[in-house]
Amino acid sequence: MEIAIRINGKDERRQACTVAELVAGKGLAAGSLIVEYNGRIIKQDDWAGVMLRPGDVLEMLNFVGGG
Image 1 (cartoon, rainbow, N blue to C red):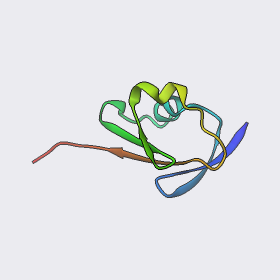
Image 2: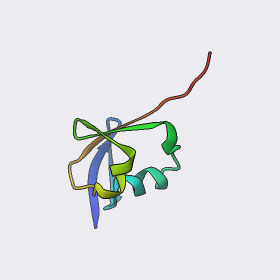
Image 3: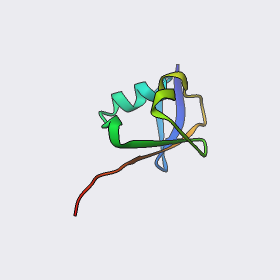
Image 4: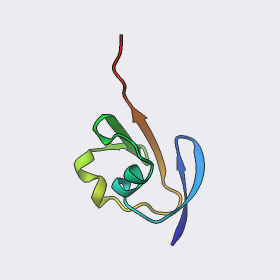
């Protein structure tokens, strides 16, 4: 089933999936990624159990070290 969600302020249409599947599908480095789901930060251990639904809002922040 295709759903409409918002990721980092942009509307997207995607197949329904879990947060873990979304992160993997986008090719993001999970080790340094923070995911805010509908206003709350979710732990990486919980990503596989969070199924995306129509209207969900996600912010994905990838931290990079440097000097």
